[in-house]
Length: 227
Image (tube, rainbow, N blue to C red; front, top):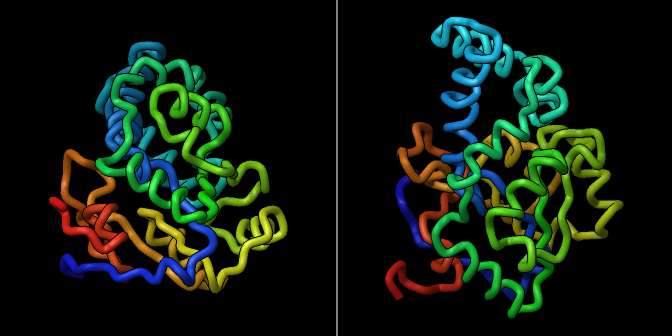
């Protein structure tokens, strides 16, 4: 899907649901941690070959993809016998908002819309990210899928979310960089769904989305990219 101007009717939107990693925050931190830093750390601690550790970790992660365990730092700390949060903290300098995100959140708040973070990250990960970025004060509510014991890829998550924060899918905008999560939201009935063109600032997205993709957050208010 090529770049397009996304027209939103803000009068019809009451709730804005927002993903964290790859949407509000640059996915570079997570990508670098899981593909480079963790294999290096694992090989040092366990006296293993780094290339072999990289393959092993990638295989283990793939086995749990889309499941709640995939997003659990406690689970992977146990599996890899090292403290994931401590290891992530070594890369805290890589944590940061995507361009225009803070201005976007401020303007959404100024419009009187409810800003709810819904993330598959667990609470320790959220706390680490919040300590090194500025989005927390611009959110009205923060939900982790671990609160519901169901990942966003699963319908159970959405039903529990609806009961928890009392939102109307027909007046809700949801932004996420995961196609599987957006598909799940679509199945549940979320009316307006947007994806992210470049979740990782350091590389182009490899696969197009079936959903409209954001390049510049502020264009959602009808502004030009440089306006």
